Length: 186
Image (cartoon, rainbow, N blue to C red; front, side, top):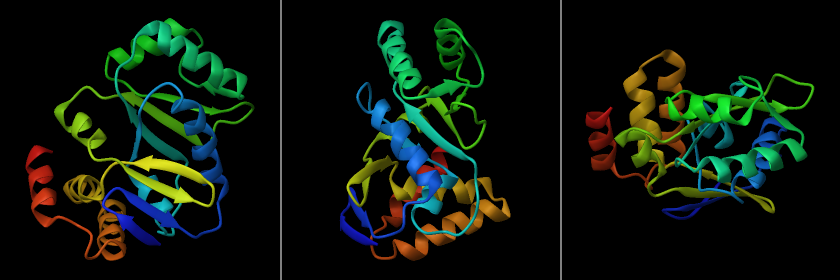
């Protein structure tokens, strides 16, 4: 792992099937909107050995017509929504602050948990994104200080281990004051 700058990391790792799923989904997503990946998959992407079937993604709210175009291209790329069939139903769930899950056709896992940014904290997660390069592909994650603050505040064993992993691999590249600020926001 190489920290190129505060907003760029390069990984030299074997791309896993979960990485490939996230890359394929976000290749479509980024044509329509900005996004950040948050939560447990971030620590896995950055080398933590644990399993998950979820890739949590936050996007800014978008208009229904733009969202329909995104859904159409996701379907063309063999992704489907597990939570609703109709575009308006999917969109309404997102407007209500719920997440909607997307998986590859003929599967239920892994899946993306997609959510519109609605809270101050979710909007802050979209600030200062980090581009993670894996070979010729890229993923966008929220900044590591936010990841650590959120995981430490949740406090489960798995979350604390995720936070510790990120602290260890990013030593010397973190802003301790920013972590404290985010913990107060949570």
